[in-house]
Amino acid sequence: MGLTSVSGNTIAIDVIPSARRGEGMGFYGLSINLVMSLAPLIAVAVYNQYGFSVNVWTGLLIAFAGVGSVLLINYPKRERGARPRFSFDRLILVKALPTALAYTLSAVPYGMVISFVVLYGKETGIADPGYFFILMALGVGMARLVSGRLVDSGKIHTVAVCSLLLLTCVFAVFALWHSTYVFFTCAWLIGTGFGINVPAFQCLFVNVATPEMRGTATSTYLTSFDLGMRLGMLTAGYITAHADISYIYLAGSIACLLSLFILFALFIYICIPGTAFVCQA
Image (cartoon, rainbow, N blue to C red; front, side):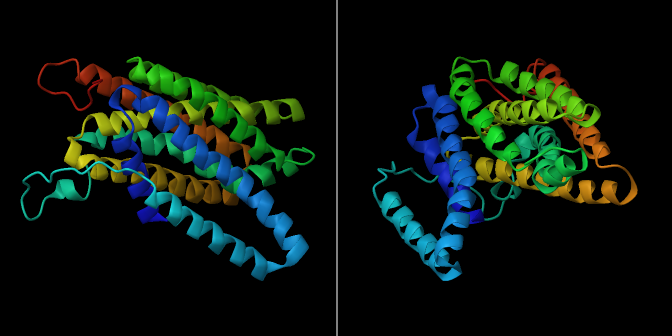
């Protein structure tokens, strides 16, 4: 899955025209979110009807269909640039490290949501808290259709800041107010925040990389998100062992606020000529 995510994102970036990169990556990410939302529902239905072995064979057939779809991609040939035999930039995009730190922090509450939100819903008296993920997926999908166009119009920084502001506020409300209406409204808004967040940050990573370094940029981008999500899970587990579950999402709000401060500091820093970490081109 690690190989697939890095190569898939890199291929998508290369085949999408640069002028529509934000919109294109929004659609690409939307397809992933839709599958991640629908696959568990389909898998449970197949399992209940036919058993586990049929579920596995269904997954295998879908995987082969994926291989066939990859063979249909008209991937442009790229000339390899001259690089030293070993470079740290092959493993991680050094120029994007400040952005990576901001993105890692913004992914922390995502890990908190996927690991503890159902339990949080049950403890606060919410009937059927599993619907949280459906509403979250809807929020992600609707947001990505809009945010990609905004990114392509040159509003990368504005979109990134707005997403972090939204997530900071929503997670604070999610932690402090407990009702069915607040729970499911926040589900949609959290999905919207992450749906806005992803295309903007991905373009921030890719835009600072040269064409031959796009794979490294994508790897750094995905690693940042995975690291933040895992940190969120670990932090949530630690908090629940010592305090009320609502404190998890207060911590998530603080993580998004810290990410916002880093992003503001980064934007101020790139205004100094010759020191830019991130460009809008």
